[in-house]
Length: 261
Ligand code: CIR
Image 1 (tube, rainbow, N blue to C red):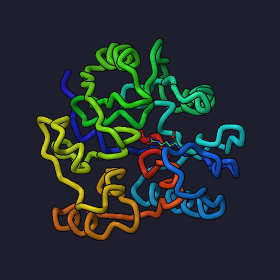
Image 2 (cartoon, protein in one colour; image 1 turned 180 degrees about the vertical axis):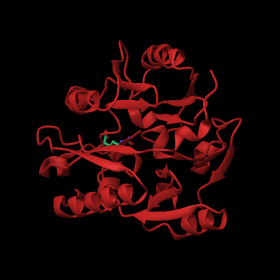
Image 3 (cartoon, rainbow, N blue to C red; image 1 turned 45 degrees about the vertical axis):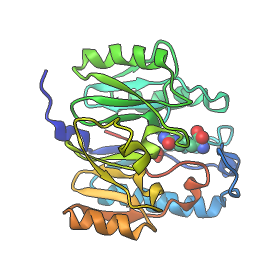
């Protein structure tokens, strides 16, 4: 089956979830201080506005105070043009999140469920012709094998790749720029996982800018990374920025806070 690869960044809709005050207790690999709920909320509102400016209609799900990381709504589900897959999250404090997106997502897309294993949505990079999938600490081979069977039915191969230490998810360190080009931190870029694509390396010191989003004509990157912004502008991308300082304290960023389709 041939697909138009630009489907990987043409979106009309995004699903986001309001942060709850409990977001300050969200998981983090390293403690660099807890986020402020008020600033998180301000940044979330700016993020929603940026998604709208990029042409997406944003559906906002209510906050879930009992699930502190549920604002990172990208992880419990994966949606492609053919349909969505409810995933299984291996982090015990997040294992109820897929159930919480079921109702809203099933009103928007045809939904199926991952039968076994664990996969976090943040490990799945759809390029239009395949899904590159990071075998992170959260995502298991068993999970990827069962996801691969679902994706095969939609005509997309899934390619598992090993993840270097120090990155929570594959998309913590990479983003699609266009169907042939991936933006990545040097660690991932040089590891060979993106064979077959042009890889643009993030400038040294701006690694957090790799958690970015191509949305229709726009490349949305985190605010505060001027070298990355300039590099992408020079390459001809229309760059927009949005601050995610509080999500970053919880190892999150732009891609983690929405499901786009
Ligand atoms: C976690 O550790 O699960 C959250 N604090 C951050 C999840 C970020 N999500 C993503 O990269 N897709």
